[in-house]
Image 1 (tube, rainbow, N blue to C red):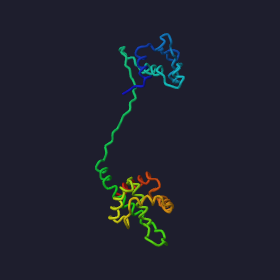
Image 2 (image 1 turned 120 degrees about the vertical axis):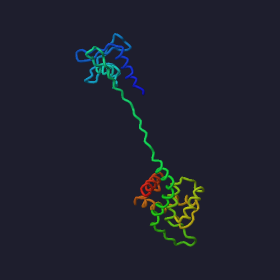
Image 3 (image 1 turned 30 degrees about the vertical axis):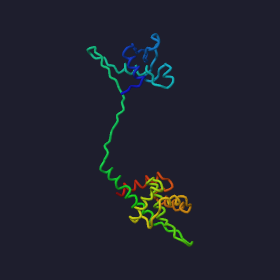
Image 4 (image 1 turned 90 degrees about the vertical axis):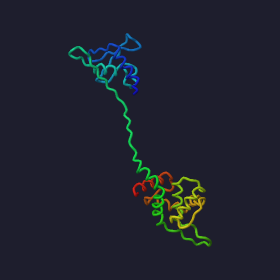
Amino acid sequence: MTLDPREQRAIMIAAMCRITHRDGVWWVPSQSLPEKQYVVNLAAEKCDCPDCDNGFVCKHIRAARIVLKRELNMDGSVTETKSITFEERKTYTQPWAQYNLSQIIEKKRLQVLLFDLCRILPDAEHKKRGPKPHRVRDCVFAMAFKVYCGLSSRRFSTDLSEAHKKGFLSRSIPGPKVTAFFENPAFTPILRKLKGSGGPDILTPFSSLFFLRSMITTHR
């Protein structure tokens, strides 16, 4: 435990110097100038030293406090009471069983909740010839899932393949394709509407992550 430097010097002054009380104030000797005495008014918490003028509780005030707390017993012995402030550090135990379980099932539960959130999204009208585009719900699921996983597009391909096998995607989506989803302005109003409905903010990765994790904790 480390004392404040001013408190340390105050203890030395109280122990080695003669501090007197007269005319309602305390007279505390200077450490640097033996012939100099500073006037301390404990009631007003004032001292005429430069340190106190700068707004600090100086060593002279602290020394006067220490002397004030001394008590003279009937037998002539002196009892000295010192107040020392210290910081207590508490360590809380971790519920490891629940923590481990939540980490194990988090990714699985996220996909279930995300699929349930996206399944109500309507598909865009397709008038052009050629292959149909990916369904809106699949695109939003893939974007949110990629934000959660935090992987590169190529590495994310494995997660998308597994999601398709589990039925969370209606068709397989290559990992690099998700980058095109993010760049497609047509998804912007859909994502904003989804955000306003209480769903995850896909446009802000960190808020999306914490929202989904809180959902997992609530529904597990």
